[in-house]
Amino acid sequence: MSSTPQVLAAASGVLRRTRRPPWRRPLHGSEHAWAIAFVAPYAAVFVAFVVYPVAYGLWMASDLSLYRELIADPLYARTLVNTVLYVGFGVNVKLFLALLLSGFFMRRRWWIRALLPIYILPWALPAIPAFVSFHWMLIGEEGLVDSLLSALFGITGPLWLNDHWLALGSNIVAYVWKWMPFWTLTFFAARTAIPQEIYEAAAVDGAGVCRRFVHVVFPLLGNLYLVCTLLSTVWTIGDFTTVYLVSEGAPSYSTDVLATLGIHYAFDAARPALGVAAALSALPVLIPAVLLLMRVLHTREVQL
Amino acid sequence: MSTITAEARLASRTRVRTRSAGRLRRYLGHAGTAVLSLTLVVWSLLPIYNMVLISLEPEGDVFTDHIWPRVPSVESFWGVLTQGHWYLEHFWRQFANSLYIGAMVTFFALLFGSLTSFAIGRMRIRHGWLVSNAALLTYVIPASFLAIPFYRIMQNYGLADNPWSVIAALVAFATPYAIFVFQEYGRSIPIEVDESARIDGASPPQIYLRIYLPLMAPALVAVGTYALLLAWNEYLYQFLLLSSKSSMTVPVALAQFLSSDQSPWNYMMATAIIYAAPPVAIYYAFRRRMAAGLTMGGVKG
Image (cartoon, rainbow over all chains, first blue to last red; front, top):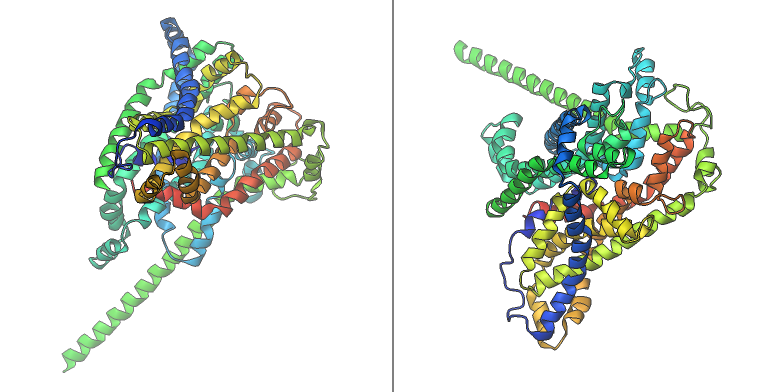
């Protein structure tokens, strides 16, 4: 879910089977029964609340005429373009800036250390209050952004949420604001794991900041960066909250993405099957991303 | 003789020049750092400042464009805490709902996650990796795509407008992370501990309760914080599944403000700040442990 990126992480460990055999003798009798009893609660949750909804959704959206209807709907075409722009810009801008800033936070100055807790505040803040605040900041002349523009520079700011492009851009900015700190911390953690001697050796050999980034940091973090891009793409395609609260799809549904369009179809237009079909139409992108992700995670365990 | 002094003079002059160039570059570096730091502070704090600014406005004064509060007043905070506005008449009930859902999600994610990871990682149940991979798949299914079928199913189960429907969904989405972190962390605990207990005749539930859980305490704290924040942050499922005023949670009520034209914005922002305060506090309290959990999986992998 979009609000769970902490998760990144541990995903990598899973695919690796345990090296050391934990209980050395095979489980027998009562122990085997206990082991099954221990797994049973999660298995039940998984079947009842993951497998069943997935199957139910596939069944709801199995009617091919739904897809014909989607393709005929101009709103749907627009939504696809929005989703590509939102995910494409949102994920890449966020991750690239996060990678650069993680290097900035590696410096050992006291005020940079002091800055870090402030910088991660957007991540610590719950999404709903933050996005409600964004919405109100951009609402027009009364919003803080336009008030600041007129107070500091004497400019009359635009009505941000009344223009398709400005509203889409606002969604992307709010998204980057909320999630960049988390990914910065991830890259920061990865950078601290790189032995300091490598940097020093490169510096002694005369490599400047840029060359150290290109030849030392990027090759070492490249794989992690790829995993983060894939994972973040998958989550962002499913991101509902940002668009729903910041621009509310305004003006007139023109900034909707697939996740919000599905909900609009299902609950505002009372067409749940069409809503599921709209969401499922992202599968041709999602499935390759997931397969690639799993592959990369497999190879990563060899490399790192 | 004269050539040598000339060369020496030249050398010292270049040294002076490079030194001043180095100093200049260092000044520029400092200036760049300062500008970047300032930008980051403004960028991070602006939406938060906006919340504080609006919440400090006295009622009715919200529509004037200014960038600091003219007459700061904490009236709106008081109004929220005493449920003093008709928009807020269920505030404490809704806050309790959020808290209840958060606590239940945390409890069940920890319970199911630790039991499953114990069976897979320590007892090494046959086909355990299948369970891990199935859990991994839950990660990559966007929750918003499951929302519509989930809504239907909850009506079939008779759980419409019931907090347990939200708890079920969130437990299903939080437990995979718990399983992963516990399995990763469990690798650092020597298996001989379990084996000697087993030889002494301890049964699997005893080993789980007396040995596994106490040794896993740091991971339990990290995952518990994560699950609590997940539930506190979630919006879509709470919005779809909880409809009545007395069963809804604070974020749902907050977003309802947004859809009305004449909402009391200062009360809304005060509610937002009160709702945001606990997770921020928890977050800073457990920051180091959460970061440790992050590194644990992310970098070692």
